[in-house]
Image 1 (tube, rainbow, N blue to C red):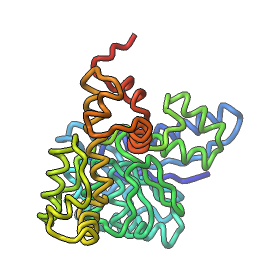
Image 2 (tube, rainbow, N blue to C red):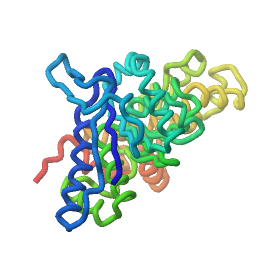
Image 3 (spheres, rainbow, N blue to C red):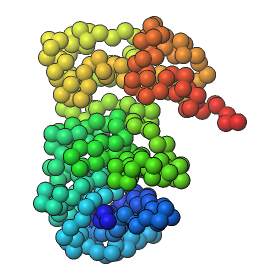
Length: 329
């Protein structure tokens, strides 16, 4: 039997990411029993205290134990929390973060973080030099706080040496399906996905991401070029032009731009243009070529390839899925 600890930190947790893992693992037990097999998971909800009040005391999570009563467990699940509460929560849960780290290093416990629960996982230091996923909207803050972690913000699932993380919001369900497949096999995972109506094969969160550009830095020359790109995305913009604007060499400009924004200048230009194209597909009834020309591209093949690489969908598929004028029939 695999012991699963759903950890409830001190502070405001996203309730669905506490209830979700509990329902998934207990449902697998029910499915196994229906097949004449033994339950596989022992699931406990464990917190910093036995009763954790949430959302102005409207909800309460009743924990079975406190974390310091857990000497051994196979998997710790870290739920998402309110992003604006993260700094306080990381400070207030420092002992629990050390416990998570020690459980992995000393007992071999696997750790799964859901959405911005990745901030807790990163605070343990266990994923320094390793990959991690989190909500795309928290990517800039994550990179600033944890520069030694290789954030792959397009991923829905990262699985590295018994340390797991997931993309944003309800995509944590995809990570749970991944864990069930790993521990119980594909047949059970597929059946579970069908019962919970979770898209089984989804592997990135690109189509949901919105690119705002990393501007929380102190390089004013780079910031000036970022604002220029965003105001002139419909034009052809060269890296030489931007370097001249910053009054530095091209090589130095590229280095500084990457350091400040986590993107090369070319990547930034492409993402700004594609974000503008996405907005048009969402709000206007324009053809792909019309949108392509409006954001400064004139090669249909290249535009479609770039759009798919950044969003995970073709321009037509994106328009069909997200255009606000589309009426479901």
